[in-house]
Amino acid sequence: MIGQTISHYRVIERLGEGGMGVVYLAEDTLLGRRVAIKTLTNSAGPGNQHFRTRFLREARAVSALSHPHIATIHDYGETDEGQPYIVMEFVQGETLGELMLRETMTIPRAVEIIKEVAEALAEAHNHGIIHRDIKPSNVAINHRGEVKVLDFGLAKQIDLGPIDPSDPERQTLLNTETREGVILGTPMYLSPEQALGLEVDARSDLFSLGGVFYECLAGKQPFFGGSPVEICAKVIRDEPPPPSQLNADVPQELPSSRSSMRFRLAFANRATISLNCPMSEANCAC
Image 1: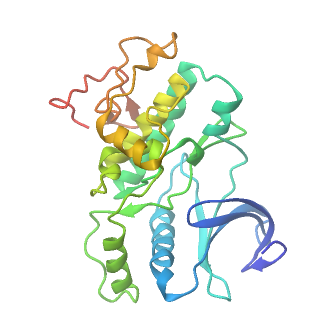
Image 2: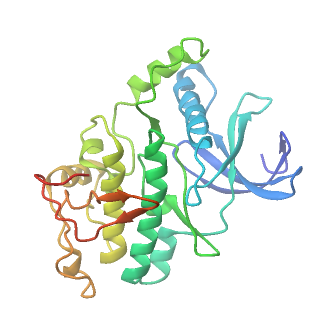
């Protein structure tokens, strides 16, 4: 792939690989800018058609989003060999995971980053899109300190009406919706609904975001274990210790229960996070 030209994008180097595809750095030869190209791995064969369809749905869904904290989709299509690809904004910087490895995060900086991720999720949720895989490696921070949410590869569009009967991918889309009713995401950041393989909505993203915030504050993940099954069991069953037990700078009144991790988002001109939300199961309005 390196050195090849896809449409008018010249592939320069490989950046990384995720669960669905490989990401390359490329140059847009028309506009003279650097972009990231995500290609779908193992897309050949009828057995992988559902992956191709999900990839296409990601491109269609996220390309409709325009927000300063969401990595922009510039283009998408298929190569001459039929391999689907997405062209997206190239974020120069580091991921939140890399930042946490490099330095101890202050509480104000953690709040600022999580707040900007919440604003990005609010925009996606307003369009009926849930991310399903919020984690530190999917949050990038560019060289200007701006947050960008990456990789809606597990995105699922909801409440947007029935599938268009004239869509040539209609039956495949219907089949894909059924097949994706399974556990998807990264175990340490799953919501209980995801861990149980249940239907999820926007609240699932907020739970995962709570897990990321917990890690920013406490320096460790709220749920961990020796296997994905063990981690999922803890997500469903256990309460993480208060982050103040792991970081003396964290106020003791900051809640840490699983219900508390669903942050209350208030939307006026911008999303805000209430860190002291009285989040009992009975009165939580999230």
